[in-house]
Image 1 (cartoon, helix red, strand yellow):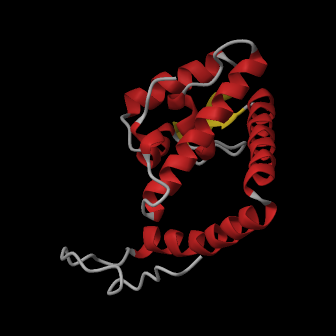
Image 2 (image 1 turned 135 degrees about the horizontal axis):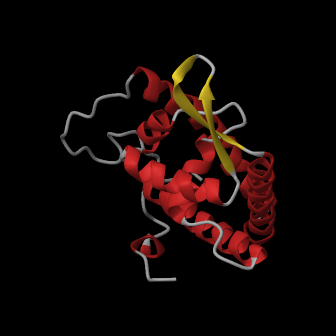
Length: 177
């Protein structure tokens, strides 16, 4: 793997950079394992970005492109690859016969489940290295953060005034664990 700026994120970095770095590196490790188990490069970062948005029910390719903020052409190319691998199928949208839905095939569902199993394996391996209590604390904190971030996404996040404030003024407790 090529050197990455993410690998240089300091443990003292803010929460956002740490979350981003950990998520990206976990993703890289999991993709490598999926590809190793398949005996070929099955999953690329571009394809992996689509996976959380795919389901058995289906999603319109235009909505998929909007969610991951790429062009419809880029999504179309990725979907063609997933379709070639028989992980997704394009079907007529029952609500609008002019539109199409992309949905997971049974092989796609199995691949999706395998990916979750790989992530569960690495989560357990991390718990061994980092500690079960610490992993549970992270999971608990993220579980409490998730609905707040979802609310901000739906209703608008607090607006930053642009002025730099001290850590103490921002309510950061340097002694917190």
